[in-house]
Image (cartoon, rainbow, N blue to C red; front, side):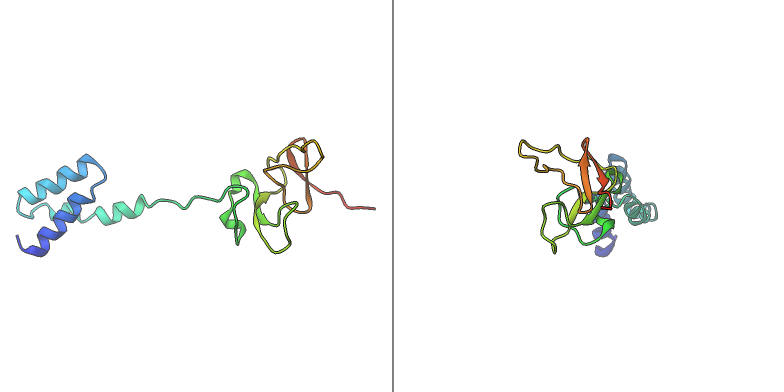
Length: 129
């Protein structure tokens, strides 16, 4: 087995995620490289199991709606009590929000501007007549 083949096999054994992958790689070494074609699918397999990017939770800085957790109904916008230029993942319609404190101020998690917290759910602020 030449050095480059040995390097490939050694790398495969070192990066094996499961015992099965490590055994297949070890068998390839023992067989003198005969099993290398079996190992070739490792890269394709690794691509399948690529880690998904996690969505941002409420209160985290964001740049687009795609970054915020849609299952939590979050938007990338200015939160209530936030400054106009800072966007964070905050509550859109139907998302969970914090109850008001003793002074009546909103608490975390915050709704986005144009939403208010009613019964711990963000609802659109009604238009004034």
